[in-house]
Length: 220
Image 1 (cartoon, one colour):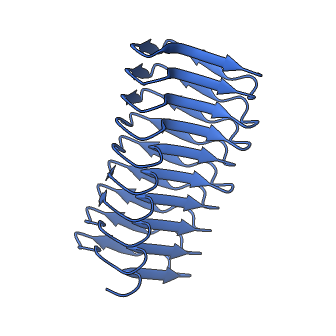
Image 2 (image 1 turned 135 degrees about the vertical axis):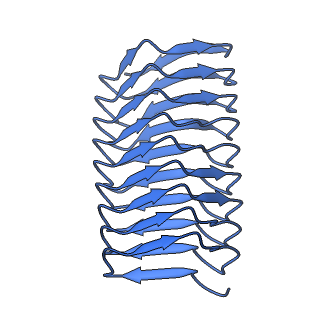
């Protein structure tokens, strides 16, 4: 394809399922101002840009999709809230696995895999009150999980981030009141958990081992 595989603007209550949305000239699936849609069990790989983008879209469900070797990220939520991202595989993308940015709030990100991505697994930037649970982020360049730029009041629980080239999880840049509980952070190159210039993070009952440092805190 020469452009997007599927592009929705102001489309609600639709189902995209069991399609191949791969090798497009831009994005595999693009939602713009589109709510309460479901994207499930699709192959969204080898696109020039991102696999799936939700822009200013809410209450959408992304479930069971394969998003591999895209030129951008696997899934991007941009100013998109109250979405559910569950059971997807977002590996070997050129940027991130699953990215939340620019006031993408109150999303549920669960049981996804984001391994071997070139810039990280699950970054959350400028987005709050999200729940990330049961996800796996292994062998990514840089971090498994990142909270930055006023990513506040998020919950990271029951996840695994092993063998990333820098940290299992990084909290930085005025991201506050994030709760990190019952996760596994093992064999990350520099540290299991790093907190840089970010206040009031809560660490509870995490399994942190086999890194140069277990927990690193600076300027917080």
